[in-house]
Amino acid sequence: MSDEADPQVFHRTTPLSSVDHAWLRMDEPTNLMVINGVLALDQPLDFDRLRSVFEQRLVVLPRFQQKVVTNGGRPCWEHDDKFDLDRHLVRTALPAPGGDKELQAVINGMMSSPLDPGRPLWMFHAIDNYRGGSVLFGQLHHAIGDGVALMLVLLSLTDLTPEPEITHSPNPFTTMLRGRSREDLEKARVVAEEVMPEGMRLLLNPVEALRRTGGLLKAAASVGAFFRLVLRPPDPKTAFKGHLVVEKRVAWSDAIPVEDVKIISKALGGTINDVLVAAVAGGLRRYLEAHGHKVRDGLNFRVAMPVNLRGLEKMSDLGNQFGLIFLSLPVGIVDPVRRLAELRRRATALKRSMEPTVVYGILQAMGLSPHFIQKLVVRIFATKATAVMTNIPGPRQTIYLAGRPIRDIFFWVPQSGRVGFGVSICSYDGHVRLGVGTDAGLVPDPEGIVQAFHEEVEELKRLAAAKSVP
Image 1 (cartoon, one colour):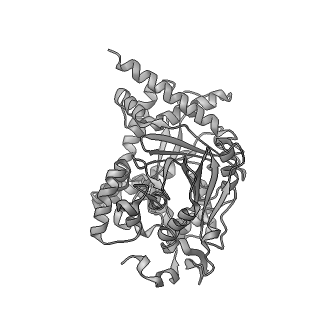
Image 2 (cartoon, helix red, strand yellow):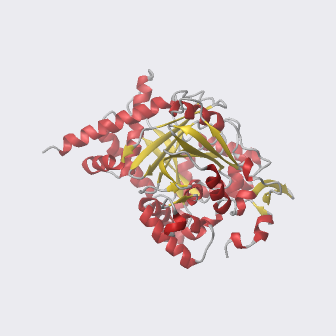
Image 3 (cartoon, helix red, strand yellow):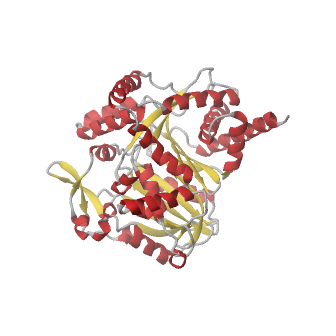
């Protein structure tokens, strides 16, 4: 039975899991643990219809009417008796001319301000006057769920057709979040794989790999991965590491056709993800050089990348069930083709490691430990990485929000501790976009990184075309 059919669930007090508690306690003024995302539409939103969608699909999930309280010394989810949707879904408009710069300024301010801890930890802003259409900007605290869970939350608000009531078009993402029967989940999986096959493979494959791992082998590999993780030296000092301030800056790329990335991968080797991450590495090298920083041979720094550990049947639980891998970017390699090949080699090796489950275990322990110990562990592990990077393949077809076609989806991943730099890659409807979030004290111009990323993609396209010529 789904939670929607049981009103008592809304008023049940539920302890936070140790991992969710860990993410809640990671909140700092300089690094808020909030996932921020954008759905951009070419047409203005019908706000009344949008509000109805939220009433029917979001607030029926108990977590979205619950706030965090302390009960007997333990943090718990408790129903907010004063819950009011109008405090969590608000309408605003950009000042003229309503372009990217205006939207960027508004999001910069919102990302620098914490959510109200006395209410459920989420907000959505329907922003009108953006390039003749609207934007839905969502903010969801990491304690509610990880990136995969919250992406499903976002997709559950959408439809596969403009008028689903007429076409009876099912929304598989809503079904996944409602805890339906196994038969319903299987039907939802089939539809979801048609809509976003790459995303579903990413969601399910890591889980299957873990299930195939034997007990003794898994334990031995975990011990080895733990010691390799702890004993790694800190990342080198670069322009991307240093003292953090409260202000945040965001930027996003133009849409890049997925077909262009496929052409590069076929000509130069590697997966689509390898090509995109290599382009990020090359873009970071270009950015450093353009700002007068000497990039030495052999310079490497790591990005922490989430890996899903949750099965499809657990999606309705929300919460955090993911680990991290620490991928070392070969920024010091000058040649883009060699850089791509080396990145591919490193990424392949990491896919076979037990590092994600080790990090998940550490997060569980952190949530149960005193706060000062957690802060110490977070600071130690923050030295091991320069940035957080995530890549979520979204739907490969146009989807709709409150009857309006969605043109773009992009988002920004939060960072913890002293990490002040995040890179988010999201594909949707045949193209891919890069979202860059930075600390204003480190990188006040993330648009410079975006521009360097575009230049690197163009260089890879040129090299791919040259190799393809007989």
